Image 1 (cartoon, rainbow, N blue to C red):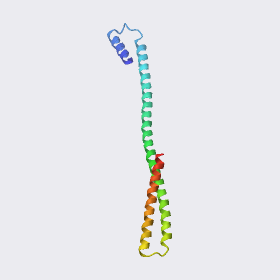
Image 2 (cartoon, one colour):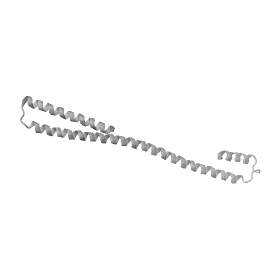
Image 3 (cartoon, rainbow, N blue to C red):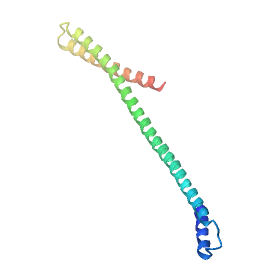
Image 4 (cartoon, rainbow, N blue to C red):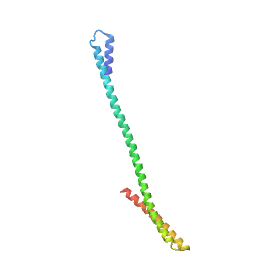
Length: 133
């Protein structure tokens, strides 16, 4: 709007330079107002751009948090499983040290292996249920 007024003033000055008194002061005031508005617009646009950048950064950080939480969950699950696996291996070693031979040895080994798999499965199920709560 200010630019329109400035152009109209300039047209009037070109048509009748002697009729408009104080045209220079009016033009200066209009130019000052135009420059003020430009500065305000720059400040507002800068703030909006920064806000958009912060929103993008916030979104990416939230996604990163979700990924890290998933990694932590997986690590905890693996640690629980490894604890159970270690306990099963210790049990295997203790039981296999009893001097069993042949079919008895094979049956014992199969039973221990089945128990380890069962413990692994139970650990995973408990961890998944605990995560849903």
